[in-house]
Length: 298
Image 1 (tube, rainbow, N blue to C red):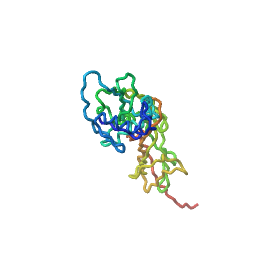
Image 2 (image 1 turned 180 degrees about the vertical axis):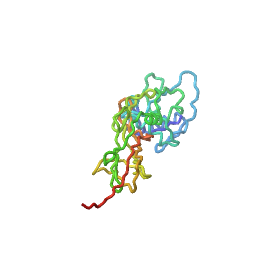
Image 3 (image 1 turned 180 degrees about the horizontal axis):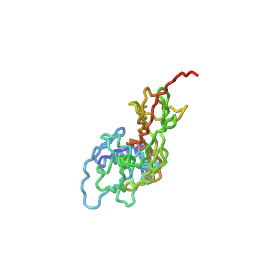
Image 4 (image 1 turned 90 degrees about the horizontal axis):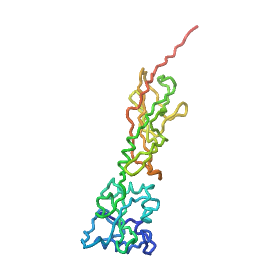
């Protein structure tokens, strides 16, 4: 079944209750024993399947249900875990399991079918739904973190241009030249802006864009390398370069990488943990001239 108890699941107050917050270590040990699975409270396996339950005549003694590992209370109760406005843990936890997975993390709940309306108890957790008990009722399908990251990279981003000082796209040899990445006033997304909601399966997802890095190419074979600063004008701009030789058409551009955050159904913002590397940014042609000093007599 591929389920394992979490530290939050086995931390209780010493009383058996209706959910994880009111359960003891011994109680969860008994749950796992019923499934034919050994329990080690310090390090439960995440992919070890229990022994198959014997098939009995009549209705099954247990019913199962899956919920996303979401919500501000995490595993406080089955009701709290159905809050899908805070799913950072659910989306990222399985990346750090062995083996790693890009599937969301689900909680596995079980309760006795007799007597009716018995309390749900936390039986463990699973990455994705394939290893869940066959009779478990799944929640609505949701995107994986990888699908959300792919949706971010496909957003309609704007592309920055380079503003240069001295003005007029003309500079001189041996004169410090200043550069700044500027974003055009168009319909594309740029740092500081939030996307329209994107529907991904059962979730409505918004993205908030921020800059990650800039690389200024000066048109003479040199560049700034990746920097986090978007630059500025004279005299305080931090991105500057001095040309050593004349160049009638230096092709200047800035390559930009964007990152950001996302939120589900209007919930908390979560780091998207991916990069959109923009391509084919506009080029500014800069003339680099050489000034000659002469002495004149009257």
